[in-house]
Image 1 (cartoon, rainbow, N blue to C red):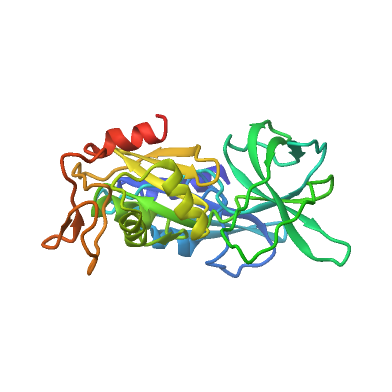
Image 2: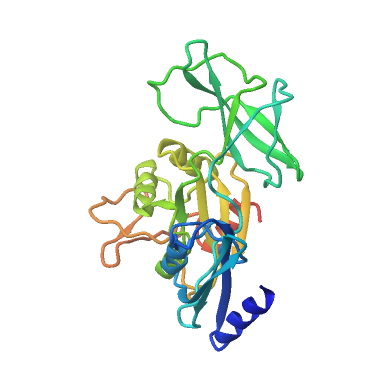
Amino acid sequence: MKLLISALVLLTSAFSQTTLCYKKNIQNTIVQKNMPLDGKDCQSRFSVNDMIKMGWKLTDSKIVNKNGSFDHLYIFNVSNEDAINIPSTINLAYQKALLSDVTTNSAKIAIGDLKKGQSGIVVHKTMDNKSIIVSTGEVVSSSTNGSVLKLTKKDMISQDAIPTTKIMPQNGDLFVLNHLYGTSLLIAPNMKAKKVVSKSFFKQNFLSEDFFATFLKLKETPSPSKEIIQEFCNTHQIGTIFVVISDTLYIVDANSFKVIDSQELTVDDSTTNLPFYTRIENIESGFFDFDLDFNYFSFGENSKLTNYNKYYSNLLGL
């Protein structure tokens, strides 16, 4: 097996980037292009179709018979011109676990290797089998075997019509980690950075930055503070904030406002727009000016946000 893998890699060594993905012990020879693959760059998350969407080209594949089961091997490559940023290794998909060792403001879950600041919701089932969100939880420590949560009585969904409850979290309640993580706000300095992130994280649902720009306009504030960003995310049920600063992408939990992951980003464009890249039409001028020629927000001398990279670095506590 190792010799076969080495031979496959050598066949494509002329390309700038080559990677092997695989799935072992499959019971048939049918190629399932939507099946998550193992390997360094597939990360047990991305399928053949996913890799192709991210810019990789499938150059070779093999199926190896191993005593009635089959190993599916795939070789992908990408040229320098098509090189992409590989998505973060953090798992943004929601996970479920039961609460244990619950106290007034803490609990444990049997999910390990989490990032401090990851959050979720606590769901309690009532006597009539109805599910109620009774609390939020934030990871404060994590080991290989489990994690400790800080519990907070906070509404994850901004909706006055939903009744509140005095029920407290209990042992056996369901914890949904990474609640709403699939919907994100992207704050980027320019169009190229936006495209790079959107392509690398094509599975994310990025709410248009123009909605956020309009929200700032209505709030009459040119500087998006932590509180303003969290209010917007809560209103639109956004779980993660992607912020591009210089050559790095930071993924922020919208509930805890903590950086839960970061990765280097190849953008090759150092230009910045304030307060971030956005294109908007038919917005009346308010507290700050609006440049109709380029459809960008522009700021006067009294604006707090005069340096994009410095402002967001300070905002995230970097």
